[in-house]
Amino acid sequence: MNFYSTNDASHQVGLAEAVLRGLPADNGLYMPETLEALPSSFWRGAKDMPFPELALAMTRQLIKGSVPDPELREIVERACVFDAPLVQVGDRYVLELFHGPTLAFKDFGACFMAQLMGWLIRGNDQKLRILVATSGDTGGAVAAGFFGVPGIEVTILYPEGKVSPLQERQLTTWGGNIRAIAINGVFDDCQALVKQAFLDEQLRTSLQLSSANSINIARLIPQSWYYARAWQQLPEHSAAPVFCVPSGNFGNITGGVFAQRLGLPVHRFLAATNTNDVVPEFLRTGSYRARPSVATLSNAMDVGNPSNVARLHNLLGPSADAWDRILTGDSVSDDDTLATMQLVWKQHDYCLDPHGAVGWHSMDQHRDLWDGYAGILLETAHPAKFAEVVEQALKQPAPTAESLESLKGLEVHKINMDPDFETFKAFLLDNR
Image (cartoon, rainbow, N blue to C red; front, side, top):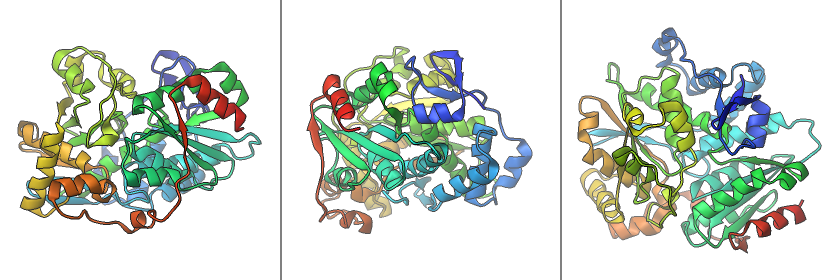
């Protein structure tokens, strides 16, 4: 299987280059050469398939022969050591994606990437340097997935003061092969620095750089798995699901479209954003207008120029009308986020994190989309990661998580830096 750039379909590379380079030189994003559906006979038998077997079959289809099957099986099995349970809450289902090591949906992608990259660089004398920009959860998941992996060093960029205190500790308390840089700006500044680094000729020739953001195709492959896992857990004879996906950089929903292209029954996607509503505005007006992000209570979705829009244009078409065949967009204010968290707690005794609350509110506003279908909300993070927001909404202490409580006594190690590329470049070259 080859992978091509969204900016130039004639630019094609193998899996190793797509994953280890992360970003093509033309500033596009890598996509699989083909997205062919698995046979209908596969899906008829997939309901009772163990989750690792289901994930393995989907991954085989997405990378077709790029990794020998015994090694691919081992990579996938090591990434599927936790589940994504589907629970019914009121009139809808919630897919809990927070049962991994850092209590966020990105754990699937980070665990898979770490295993795959470790296999791809076997026998390589040059250290692989992972650059990752995070608005909250990605960096912690990447740190957990890559900590201690031989031959790989990770540099995490995050916006100073714009992640939760527990999120910051998940980024900054590792040491070893993980280092964190707090950028005096917003997430888009962090993402721009990472993209500039991949396009800089001196860095590309001096260092072996790769990314662990959803700009890397290896992050999206495992993000297709849990859509199929949700479908597996629906009652027999359920209608095709409508997935509501809290969205920031739009990698999560791109993984969902991958799953749909592989043949997973999906009726529709609802992309729920906070007030950073670039994509809902595009769907509403037909005009795509990237702009600086603004801070919200659902901070992991504070993205003003989502990278994966390029992939969605490639998958769905260039126009808003083309997107509308499968995707609806919605945006939610902070006030509605808090009110929804409170409402769901009172009515259902279920604690949503602020990102899940954005999705729940969008489902309420768009009931017509899932009337007669199985409505599934992707709950992307454990509420304990956003204790301050939960307590603000519920007027009581937030649920706790043992893995987060253990972070509170650890020392924070971070480097503060302005969003200046030459400063960042010099740092990378000086710390080879």
